[in-house]
Length: 339
Image (cartoon, rainbow, N blue to C red; front, side):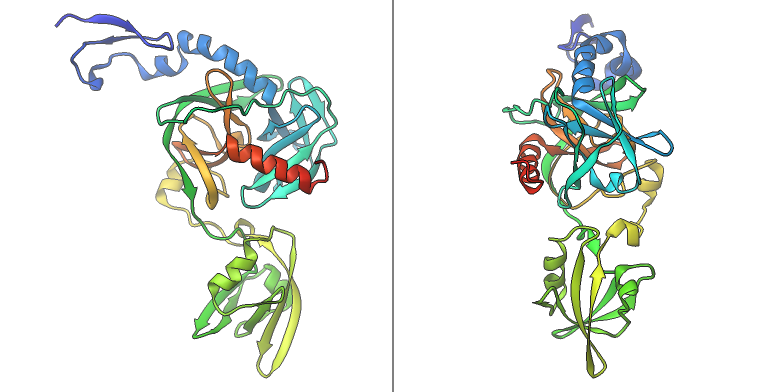
């Protein structure tokens, strides 16, 4: 059968018979990912990511641990809140400038976002003006590893439909629940939890949280889903024949309970601790890692379609869609008194 050289739209040449199946493609996977034609296409995108990404460093170890997405010229940056909470002090680099006194000015538990302010006035915010439907197979690029001044870029494609990711509430009292008719009690108290520190005991009957009567799990979770780690709630319980009230400090779920690790998780390497319960995500397959989250996901034209928020497995990344990213940014600016 006669064969033809067919150049693809990204400049890669494949030997492919017109009627043969995809399995007959002879071009090596490594060449298609890292060949000179790919690098040539990605050079302008690398410049875009360089301008629009922030790099967060642990001030103690000086190691890079997460990325950020530049949202405004005057120094507002989004990053992944649960990862930021793991580091006591941090610094931020954008391009060639290093900022040593960043401040967390707002947090959003629903999306696992922290809004950070640095002392800057001429940053280049991401372009969120993406109007087209983001179809599966669309090429996107995100950050790979970083050197002090240079980002490595990782290409991939949108690999699944945009969707909601379900999961448990992200803050916990630190209790195990027992439901009997319209009564909810504690079958156990988790060590080092807010409940243990507040003096709650097994067999206490839960009456209310922040004044809301609690008769079932949904009542309790309805209150907790509006809270964030570090906040306190008023708890009223019945203990024997008496009432006992206290204030309980809420802690992040992953701080109190280790998330169940499957065999797939073990084979996936370092994955994000917070990787579920997002209102809506886009999924892509760029080759990244847990510490590469927080940065923008862009098209080959440099338009931002989202922000990486979780690495749930070896072959998948979740990103907040650009539309939601813009909406929550405006909301958090107002929350921080900057609107």
